[in-house]
Length: 305
Length: 118
Ligand SMILES: Cc1cc2nc3c(=O)[nH]c(=O)nc-3n(C[C@H](O)[C@H](O)[C@H](O)COP(=O)(O)OP(=O)(O)OC[C@H]3O[C@@H](n4cnc5c(N)ncnc54)[C@H](O)[C@@H]3O)c2cc1C
Image (tube, rainbow over all chains, first blue to last red; front, top):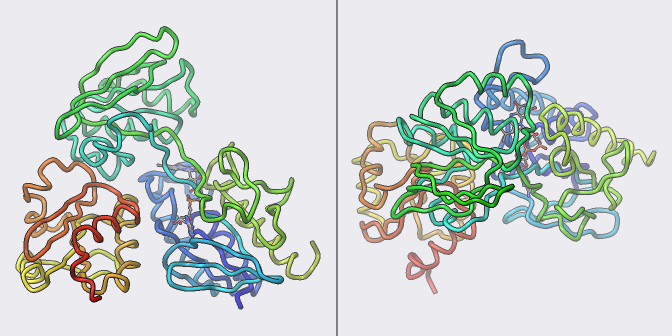
C-alpha cells in the first residue's frame, strides 16, 4: 500500500512530490496524459521566482521532476481514472492497474476551455487551435484571430505576431484582465489589432477555416471577418471529472478545500493547484499549494489532523 | 527521436515497410508538445487492448516525415500531431491536432475491429 499517490505532474503535483519524498513518504506520482502540465506550453516564463532570465516552461518542469526523482519519488505513466474508498484507504484505478493508497493528493490541474460555437469542433486542427506555440507555424504570413482571456492569451498574440501577417485579438469585454506590462508590450506591435467587446459566434470554412461570425457584446451588431486561423485562449477548466462523487466541488468543478489547508471534504484526500484555485492560477501558487498538500498529508498520517 | 514508449519510425522506407507488413497501423507524427504528448500517451495505453495494431510515432521535424505531410488526407491539416490510420497499406482515416481517448478508440473500433481475434 502506498503512503501517498499524487495525481498530476504539473507544478502542484511535482512540488508535493518533492516535499513528500523529502518527508520519507515515497510518493507515487501518476503523471497523467500531460507530463509537466500546462506550463510546458509556455516558451518563456518570466515570473517564476529564482530565474532572472526568461526560461521555458518545459525546462522548469524537467528540473522539478528531476528534483522529485532525486529524493525518491516514483513515477507512473497514465491517469487516475476513478477512485473508491474502502476502510481507511483508497483504491485508485489508473488505466490497467489498481493502486491502494492511504492518502491521495489531487493535482490534476486544468485543461484549455473551448469556445463551444458552431464550426469549432469541425475545424479543430484545420485552422482552429488551442496552442499557438504548437501550431503557429502553419499560419506563416496568414491572418489569424486570437480569442483572448488573460495573460497567456496576450503571450499567444505576441508569439503569433512574429509569424502571421496580421493578428486580430477578440475580447468579450471592453476592459482587459492582464498584466500592465504585457498590455504595454502588445500595444507596440504594429500587426496586432484589437477588437473589443466582441465574441465569436460561429467559425466558417470549407475544408479549412476561412472566417468567423462575430457579435458585439454591447451593441449586438454582427459582422463577418475573414481569417485563416483561430487560436482559442480563453482560459481553463479544472480537470476533476475522475474525482467527481469522491470530493465536493463547486458549480464549475473546482474542488472545495478547507480554509488555510488543502484538505478536501473527504478525509485523506487533499487537493492543490488549478484543480481548486479559480482565482490566481499561477505556477508559483500551484507549487506553494503542492507544498501545503504534502505537509498536510504528513500531518494526517501522523494523526495530527 | 521522440521520447515516447511507441515504436519510433525514423525513415520513410521503414514506415512503408511497417505499413506494408502489418494490416493495422496507427502512426502519429508530431513533436514533444502539449497537443502531441497526450496522443502518444493514449496510444501507449491502448497497445495491450489493441494488440493487433502497430502503434508508431514519427518526428514531425525529420525530413523523412514529409511522406506523412504530403498525404492527400493531411493536406488541410494545420494542427499537430498528424495521426494516420493505415489498413492493408491504405490510409483509412487521418486526424489533425489533439484527440481524446474516446475519439481514438472510436476510430480503432470502426476501422480496425476485424483484426480482433474472437
Ligand atoms: C500557455 C500558458 C502559459 C502560462 N504561463 C504562466 C506563467 O508565465 N507563469 C505562471 O505562473 N503561470 C503560467 N501559466 C499557468 C500555470 O501553468 C498553471 O497555473 C499551473 O501549471 C497549474 O499547475 P497544476 O500543477 O495545478 O496543474 P497543471 O499544470 O495543469 O498540471 C496538471 C497535471 O495533472 C495531470 N493530470 C490530469 N488529470 C489527471 C488524472 N486524472 N490523473 C493523473 N494526472 C492527471 C496532467 O497530466 C498534468 O501533469 C500558464 C499557463 C498556460 C496554459
